[in-house]
Image (cartoon, rainbow, N blue to C red):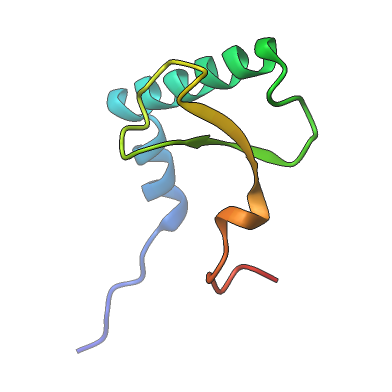
Length: 80
């Protein structure tokens, strides 16, 4: 039996347009702006907002920091 071809573009669009994803993205953007205001990250520095602990939704700048993207990918196949 042949597998049905997936429409990845449609799946991506559906996922990104869901209300929960919109709220999560808005929260991440808000946190990024907060850390930029405090001087921990800035545009084009190649850093991701790193969250201490398991909760991504923590909005305090003391619990979060900017971290180089490559360090986040240690051990990953993407790490080049």
